[in-house]
Amino acid sequence: MSNIEETKYYYGLKEFADISNEYGINTSTEKLSVYRRRGLLPVPTVMIGTKAGWTKEQIESWIKDKKQR
Image (cartoon, rainbow, N blue to C red; front, side, top):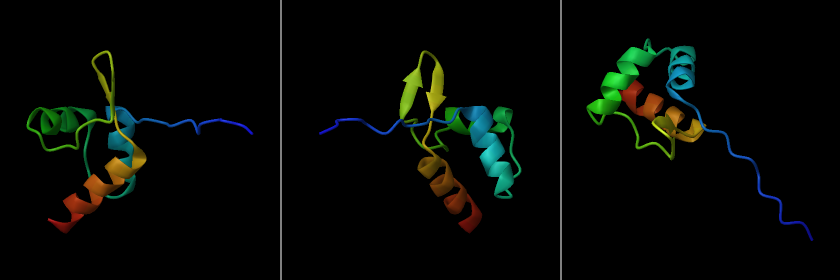
């Protein structure tokens, strides 16, 4: 019996912006940095040093909420 965990991928601000733009939310890493400082982004799932990482589900949920406003 194998105990292999699925590798999780976390997205940084650049990828967060890229995914958001693909979904029609016009944003940039600079805007997202401001949103993060203001508490307008989800809490990152991981921190690697000073770099934040989000799951794709977190990003898509944020996009869905943003589009509903």
